[in-house]
Image (tube, rainbow, N blue to C red; front, side, top):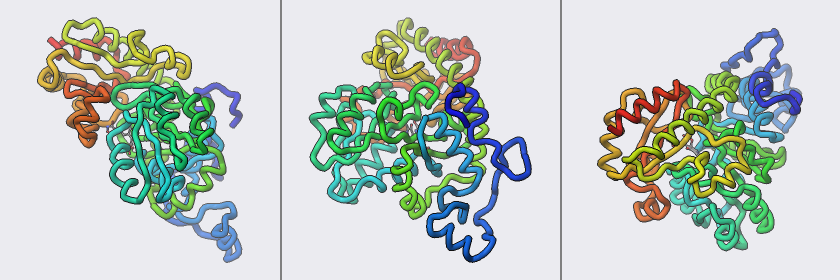
Length: 390
Ligand code: LCS
């Protein structure tokens, strides 16, 4: 697939068409293992030669290979791996890059599960972990240590929508001898390409916009051939392989990524503007609003602002609870990036694992409500929030 073709064309065509029977849609290779022609071919495949051998072993199956090729084309990366979840992608990446005595520097506003992985599991392995405000590159520079090997960024960040300067922080990471990794789940490659901005690797939860329909769990990592090569053995050994049916659902979902993302963003802007003008709303976090602290940076490094926003109600937690219980169209649920609108309360749900004192410092207050704005008609989403706020 030529990378000079448009993004939408690549969403549809990249990675497709490799099958011996001319099937129009890439088949689901629902198999655990692959039969070798002879002992020599088996031995060659096991010693690093081309070919498929067993579903847990990258490149897994031709369905996975098609998905990885499509995502690499969209992210502008050379190689990738598919995982059973976004968390499996992050865990494998961390275990590939870090060992006891190394230091991981992470943004302080990140998905609660990622915070748990870093602060609970990695520290038990003797890995030093610290969290800094990555919206300020000076704080990142000050937080880098001699043994920093990995700098982890989430931008826009879950759930405050904080933005960090991916290019500048990647430079600082490289000067310190560390690898810069960006979780691109919120923006997707449609709105932001971290590898082009200077990052070394991208991870993404496919559960969200990549799959796009709220019906699967998956994750992906994209990077240079060398970095992905270093992740293959850890991927094989930790076994967090994406299921084949999920790989196929991601392939199908990605064919409409460009259309969905444009509509998600259009609806999110409409809802953000409505909320910002509402008397009961204290503050709206959406990078597309001029009131967002990093609106200028978002405009420079993203081609649009995505479909996620959060806001704070004047009545705090109690008002938030009443709003979430009063909605009719929007569903009260975690996860995000589905065609339908989902609303949740980070402090008691996705970010409950983050200590209260840290949550409050980061702006994840008890009154903060997060919305994953769907692709319904924007007026209907606004009308539901309006009646809920009333
Ligand atoms: N990265 C980000 C930014 C996420 O929001 C999530 C999940 C993950 C990684 C992990 O992906 P998973 O393993 O679930 O595929 N975020 C969730 C959320 O905000 N609500 O439920 C899950």
